[in-house]
Image (cartoon, rainbow, N blue to C red; front, side):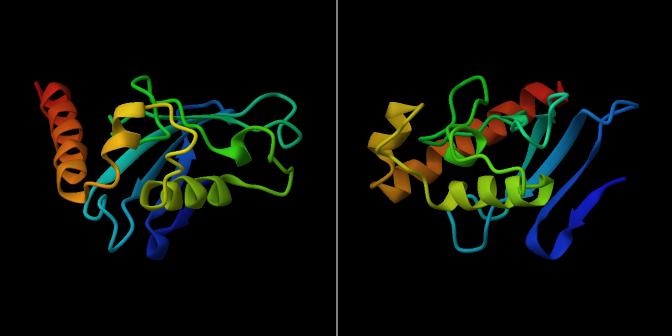
Length: 139
């Protein structure tokens, strides 16, 4: 049981034996400030899924206006706009599109929201967070 839309740069599979905990991967979209980067996410499905949304978090450090330092994501379809029609693929594609099109009006990271209009500085911070986390991970 796995989900792979390789052409779209998203995939997910159960972590270990539990069907309620999945690991997802999203590639930064082409033409976005996240292009070339690959992010790991955890998806924890509640017992009453699909009637309640899964808890989705970035496991890879992500500098973004709608992601806090713990990896929590502010995305309406994971909260009040949830629909039982959404599946793992829909969720990951939505998070992937959020990377390139943040909502700076509803920030979890106000510094990232303020920096968003300065693309050059913003991209430096995206890479700084991404690669700093990679180094910690590898050591």
